Image (tube, rainbow, N blue to C red; front, side, top):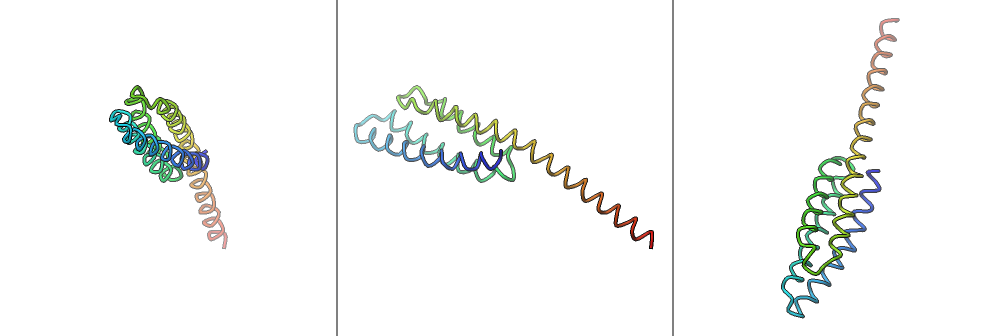
Length: 131
């Protein structure tokens, strides 16, 4: 799950970054300041997606918080003409949920490793005691 979040968030960041840059540039040329600001928010979201991807493997709960922050930014300015931000915000919430699910898998994997280490330690102690 965590690898899927990593890959998807990087792909989404590229698409969102390009779309937002084009929106911001086009709105700036056309003189629409509100839409231009929404494009800038979209570019900020793209950066947050990259940050979330960076934390997706090792610290998935931090990644989830980053994706939630991106969603809040998207829904905060979604009524300004850049309606696709609602879609990007929804995708961000999906990535946040997947990151939380991935954190459970990471915890399980850590517990399994600790149990395996304990078993090997106990076996080594038994073997040393038998000699």
